[in-house]
Amino acid sequence: MNAVVSYRSVPRILELFKSKTNYAVGWVPHFTSVINWSLRLGLGLLTQVQTVTKPWVAIIDHSIDIGTKKALVVLRVEVDALSKRGTAIRLEDCECIGLTVSDKVTGDSLCPELEDIFSRAGKPVAIIKDRDATLNKGVRLWSDQQENQVPTIDDIGHTIATALKAQFEKLDIYKRFTALVSHGTKCLRQTELAFLMPPKLRSKGRFQSIGKLGEWAEKMLSVFAVKDQAEEGSQRAKLRKAFPHFSQSIDFIVPFAATTKIISQVMGILKNNGLDKKTYRQCFELSRKLPRNSKVKKCLQTWLKKNFTLQKKLTSHPMLVSSDIIESLFGNFKHIIERSPQADMNRTVLLIPALCGKLTDTIVTQALRKTSQADIEAWEKKHIPYTVRKKRYAFFSGDDSQNLGKSKTA
Image 1 (tube, one colour):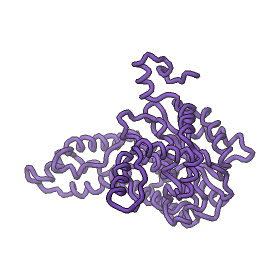
Image 2 (cartoon, rainbow, N blue to C red):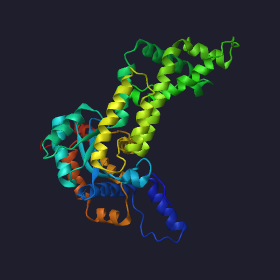
Image 3 (cartoon, helix red, strand yellow):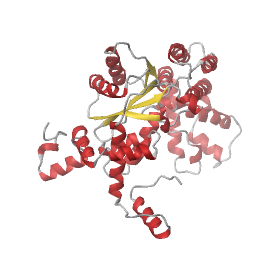
Image 4 (cartoon, rainbow, N blue to C red):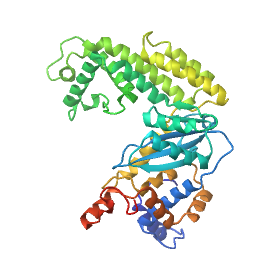
């Protein structure tokens, strides 16, 4: 039986095994011991990273800010992982080979971090990343120092989101449409028609999930297409009040929904099957259906040509072109750390290496045997000299060492 449970429930579960079954439980640990074992496992996996002979790609990204800090994570994925899986890769197909925590992230500070990570793990055949300027600069600086430059692959999701933003964001008709959507959302929230609310418009990364809005808008057009007089108090009457003159946006909604539908198909193909000769042809044919003057069309075709050339050079297998897996990893970690009353990037970041890869009994045992609690404390002192909790304690105790986020030796 496999299950996900909280740390605090582990002792109770073991007590049940001890009292209700013949399972040999010599002693029941405190839940804090279980936390420390998990952190030891994560640090053990991280410190045992070695070079491998099979070609692999690196996926790199920074987490969102948690407290005052963010983490850089580097994953290793074998080039043939997509072929083995037959669909989108999972966390068990990845290995965390790098983890650093920083207050301030710049391209100049990222370069030496990558140098340290790749000096231990070996050099990837390619690096997958989003289009963040800091990552772009850091990877470029590191690659320029190598004998042979390492090619980079811009994540397909972020690439398309950037193109969609360039095409639609500054249009007055788009602004009016999103304003109408926001107004309708407020009117429907906490009413019997809340189930018809449009997808949430994110303030950050809005265009990465904009396809859902296009799908919703297209369906709502058919609802508003009925021109008869709606009865007072009916659902249709309430909808027309929440979204006044919705049908007047038809000239925008139709091409907008068509574009997002095609893009969703393209990303579904590339994220699940990777990029090779077959998927290149499929996606290029889909791109031809976009309007001639579409910025999205131009961006997509340019991206396809560039990366298909790279795929033919690097491997005969479908090439991974999405960094979604690292976003999934961050999501899992965020779900854990948000349970803390004072969410902050602290030593629990060591859970990240333990949330991916194939953890066999041998791997876990070896990692725990070679990593002690003292190793965790040493790692924390070096990489996380302060946390919100430490600064709070230092402030009320009159200790100035944490007030500016610096250790005593800084």
